[in-house]
Image (cartoon, rainbow, N blue to C red; front, side, top):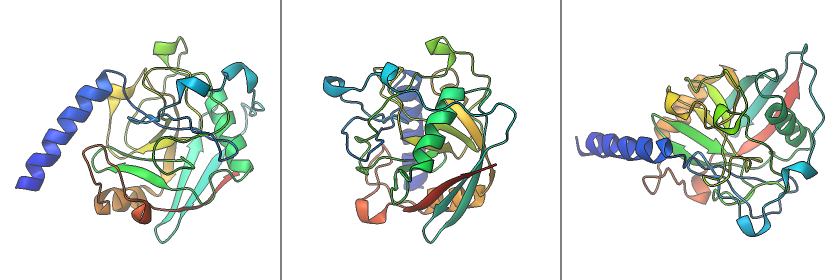
Length: 228
């Protein structure tokens, strides 16, 4: 009973925070920088936040269907179908990072049952990311993106202060979280492996109400591979 009450309070607080635009994630392209994006956001350091106009990943073919296989150690595989028509820059950035092996060996550092699991931070803290940031492809940032944060949605975490701070951190929605629509760049959906997401979210043991997972308990990403 106590656990159930705590969970309800936590989700209520989270909803209020996220509704205020504080979903964080993170960045890193050479696994070096200390910029982030974390509430499903990470926190990009404003002191050395990379400029979006310095980074232009190759566009993806609009007529090609791209799938991403995320293999998680001891857990299984999650398969994602990208939607480059809805979020072309976001998809191109994700594919570029995956193809260079950026995500291999990284972890899911933030997990909240009934909400989402977040990973892609080279530091594993929610404070890291790639060398580049991208424009946020969502309506609050002047970009029409019709995708909704329903169960299985894959979206980019970002700094709560900057709409153009997403980089490498991403999150997978476990349960419908439509309050994120228009404020975060959804760029695809899980087509297979939601059982893996459910298992990870259910078994996670966060150390706080923000979903922080201890380093030695963070699910490890063996590899992220893109195929057509």
